[in-house]
Image (cartoon, rainbow over the protein chains, first blue to last red):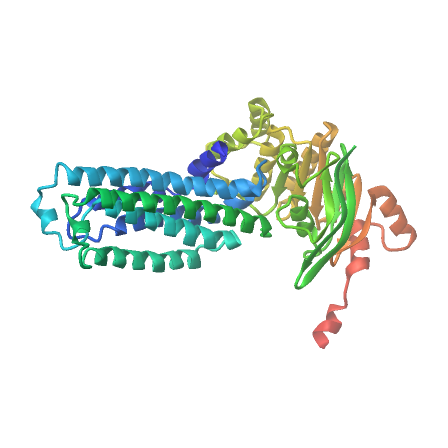
Length: 217
Length: 246
């Protein structure tokens, strides 16, 4: 798996996948729908799948001494690598906002969602949606990327709207507070979403490997 | 020793059926695999590499079934296609650096030897190579990991006569060193120069699989023609003028 992951990074990946990790820093920007940040990270990963398809990566990989399911595993590992780096950066941005910048007027008057532990939970849900919808649909054919990405966009946009609307619901205003109100509740939501992310990604990977095994390339 | 054995291989597509293909490639032999475009050569090769799933039949390498031994078998098999190329914009040195990680038997000395012999510049990208050089690059990768069997899908298609001749010489050189080659083509004159055995398929069905010399003798005796090209035309020519007139 290590060799396949290196193959992903050195041969199959688009540089945009790594450049778009920087979108995680959009969580610093007040007055911006910051759930677009993980969406852009997913867009960056999509470019690697596009790049891999154009480079006949799948045929090259099938001729290597690896099993078909290992190819799927490497694609998931690469995706998780990018998502993991992005999530770590987003956690850093959230921590800076909650500490050094907690008194910033720009965030206090922010008309859109602030970066909080609940925001981190939604970031994980966005990544989970990508892993289930885009990767899951892509590995039905091992080739198509357009419909899978459009389907992910539809789910992602709904998630962004729900995230931005969430703190307007009665008694949920604390989700927006830059001072991190009710931290126990927010971190519990983050933990639940982390479990959801892990479960959905694991199930998606198993199903994708099974589907890909049956495909005639 | 049978390096590759295919038994009763069938593959059903909605508009094409590959029916009961059976042949074997012996150690140190070049097997020519001929048929018209669309006869089922690539489907057979893809089935033999588990890239497509046969409807039925068995594929085994070195006496071991492919299913269940795929990783071990692919370490001993090299593949080169005439049309497929990988990572066209990546440097050849990068492709080599990644590919070598997958093979315990990789030899840098062999790789450099073939690169030098084929005049492949590792600083170039595959898109800067001619079609013939791309095939040579694939051969270099295969030979550097000590492949015992090369599966070549129409490697000479689209090449100029000199490049074809050089490739055929390379195949004979490799054969003399014990490497077996399964070589699909519809350019029959290539096989007459280097093949020991022949498997011939037409419209998804196997016409013959035997030593080339006995196939030629049999066809000559039956009056099908003196060359592989004439024999193929005998088996497959349709009255196109009649079709066009309908």
